[in-house]
Length: 599
Image (tube, rainbow, N blue to C red; front, side, top):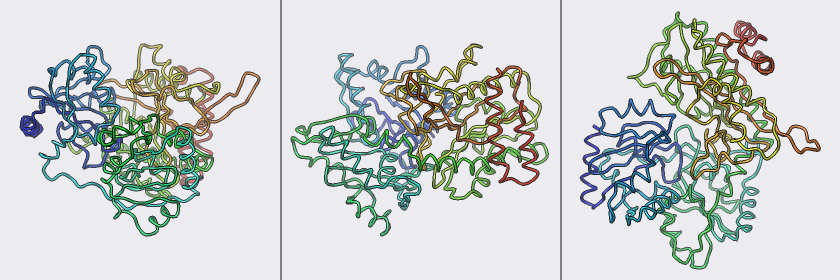
């Protein structure tokens, strides 16, 4: 099927004189996760991961993805005619360099300019110029749309308003802050394309992307106006009136391109090049002054206010109850009740649904038993689904969206007897998690400075994991949120590892170890940055762990941990029991008391 689609695409490319066609994962807004309408890369390659870029040429097709998806991509690309390029591995060219080498001078590179951001297109041009090749970017072609039979429609779910008790800051105040930032940059116009930023700024939520409560829209602001480009059928009267009361006007979703054309010469336009698509940018007039930088909403959204942090604490108790009940159910029923990866994922959803204000999962659940746990972003299908047995490890990475916050948690659970190798690996990962969560550091430190704390137990053994240690998390928003992260590697075009950690930032702490064909381990908690003491040496910072779920002591080797690490675990488990036990049955609470015993 994939080979047939590729041949159909090549036929259309030949008709249009296109030598290579680029298909990214993004929608029109630079989103990480996208609605079904935008899943062109999946449709053309069969690869279902959330990150990857596909290039189709006359004689080859190649997919570039990162270390989270190497095993998954190898499996899903078999017999498709698509070659896997493992990003950042030795000898693997960057996609831009590959195109520059393979395309002849005068060639045409096609793509849907609505689904490629301006920065990416600029970088392609820069690489082509460096190679002294004149390659034309043809950006007004949705060639996949021509061959995609029964393509899903654009999502159009109802828009909801968030109360001040959830947001902690009014829409009017947020808009005022953005205008102050615009004034500081001398920006006449500000185009905001990223969906989570729009949802945060306007205190609205929706359901246009699975697991991400966002609304398909663009927002254009001036010093005295704000226009929301949206499918107006999604706006109920109450929502329309509330937005209008704060000065928000409305226009059709696709009208943003014509609007940008009408910005007068001499005016300044501010955009985030990484979040604004190429088609929007190419529609501006030559006389419009372009200003670029991070979206004015980026840091304010990432730095949670007191209301949001308090809500996250409350939400994590609810979520902790659900996940703790799940682990209890696993321990008591494994080997007695038939359970599979998919049925365990269903059980997570059942237990979360019992919690107040639960709105749905924050991402597709990952339940990987035994060797499936080694596939970092494995997602069970009817074909891959396996039964859990009373032996070995199951890795479960899940999360919930609640009206007041977002959760993301991974627990690896022993289902029976473990090998010494499994216990040693589990303990290494746990040590990394505890050491990062227990860090105290000077104000001004960024994620790259702290990543070593999580990795050093593994690095001492010559081991590592091929993903970041942590990412920012939204508040009833996207589970992956910039600009903060923990990662030693400085990534091109990104500054996430250089973002200063400040009070209110919520970040994941998730080291792991993965052994292909055997097992995988990840232990993930969400932590929030907060101020510690201030001394003559400056302001010190620390983390508070938000996630409240036991860590499986049956997989831990206490003798392999330092005294401080054992103390950190015991303190954490005391907090788990204190907060979760009151919400459990007597049998569950008795089990939890033993599961959180001091070691």
